[in-house]
Length: 71
Image (spheres, helix red, strand yellow):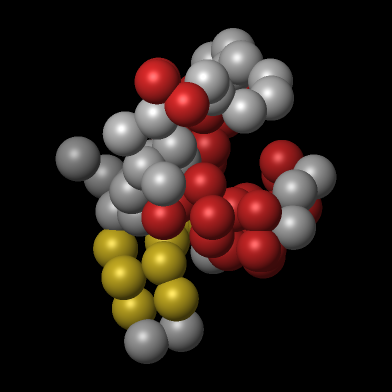
């Protein structure tokens, strides 16, 4: 599989694309609510643009989950 370098995104580009802060995205990643990066480098995690777009296109519930629904 050949990857176009323009499709590789770091956290700053992910935040720009989603309109979310770095802290928001890190928390979603920590909770398992954001795709795992395709690669971890010393400069940080990397995602493919398609991963981020698919995440953005997936509907999410707003608000907190009820206590009995939490892990």
